[in-house]
Length: 431
Image (cartoon, rainbow, N blue to C red):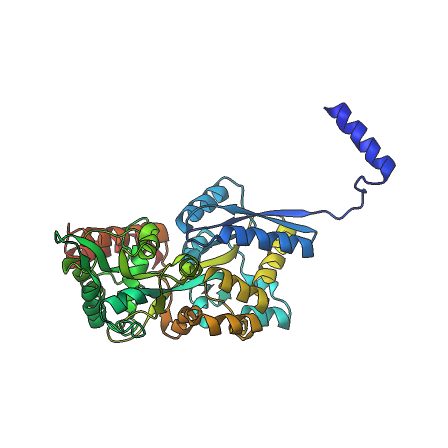
């Protein structure tokens, strides 16, 4: 084999095709990237990485698709502990406190040395920066970002005698409309539910609970510094009680609903209204066989939604040339309004920079598909996604409490009070 390789090299040299000693070195980066929604974002990211390499031949980014956001967190942390640190990864924006406490992150401000760089850092929607900055420094760059929106089946609204252009605007209407949208067969068995809001631990139960606290005057589940949670607050309990009441009234299926199947249940018309990420908007648009609409989330005393999704992080412990290459890549991905707009169009995620909505392609797209503006417009009422120190452990505590309440094993009040005690025991070390 070696003799064959030598002969091949000699032949290439004779033809003048062998690489020269002074040829440009290619810096290769592995980038962990989560894929937790439909619509093929993995193929889109691969194409973007190839385009970047074509424009920057000295840098090659290899996307490593790591599963869900939780899977990505686990794999990145394992890589760090195994001294196989990635230079860059797209991870949950809510992983910030945990990563910061480990001392593994670079801040982007250290690399933003020009006025143009500063304009880049300060050009994202402020709502997305709530989960991106800490202590006055920027540690995450928004890319795959979202809010939760309501999807509803307009055809089923018409069937139920509801106005298809007037989705529910408050909790009372959500229950009333949802009840009218329930369908039963001749034996009295429910064959279609009115509402489905995913509540399983494998999904994002904590995120959905935030929809019921933030719509109460913008009340959030945690403090701004990530050291306190408010699980046993009356507003949190009230929100979980209302959510559970949808199941108790037969408007929503009993028990927990799966994040992974909620969109397919909607597309199969097993349910008329769902709460889900705007990151599935393009998936729904491509696959719905019925007329559908989207809306901001119904209010109790105010409108509101948590932001969501992923940020690009830079990790310490790699050669400086890899870090610089990673910064170049992140800027390339996030600073071009046309590219940001196209990513939003292709996926349904919110374009993270306002100027992306001023591009000709986005104006044309949203004129023909106004639902693409729902999540962006909801940013006016959006707050930071639930994020605290030791995120994985505290999040699991809250998800477990929600599951206990939704399955009827505990009352919402009892489940959340126990969760408060357990979370306090963990977070005390960070106060």
